[in-house]
Amino acid sequence: MGSEGSAPVVVPRNFRLLEELERGEKGIGDGTVSYGMDDADDIYMRSWTGTIIGPPNTVHEGRIYQLKLFCDTDYPDKPPAVRFQSRINMTCVNQETGMVEPSLFPMLGNWQREHTMQDILISLKKEMSAPQNRRLYQPHDGNEDQRVEQKGLALRCVIMNLARILVAGRQLQLAT
Image 1: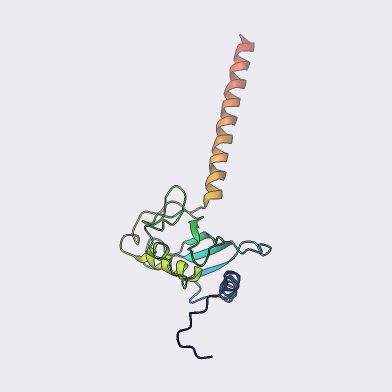
Image 2 (image 1 turned 90 degrees about the horizontal axis):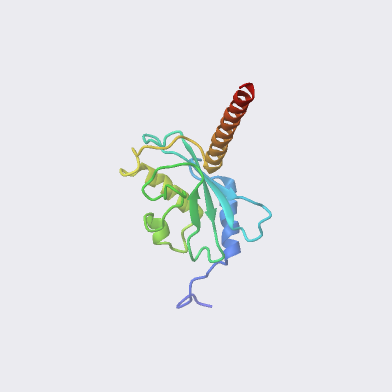
């Protein structure tokens, strides 16, 4: 019954995720980072949403960033995929996809089983304050859905303008 030479206890994935869910629901730290499950009916607890409020004295101050964290079946042995839903300019974030690049973000690149989603969000918030990110130009507020909506609106405007031109041209033809 002694603990000499015994291997560390490995908490199963679902128990670990339930612990993280409970911690996320209680709120953490100063309230500038939070997270929770996307879908309460997801029995595999794969899809999570995180929020970071930008740190003061940076270009991120006052901005609210939404993220998606995807914990595959090998989590916590492997890190979750992390993607910003909100537009952000950071050295570790792919500008096209919003994905946090593990090769550029040490917490994901050097993942350890003990790390949590809370740790990731806190580390990303700290990264926002890093010299290479604190003053980077930031795109207008908005998330991917808003960008798609704006593109759709612009396309509808172009189509409506083309329709007006065609109607006006047709009316000119009929008048002559």
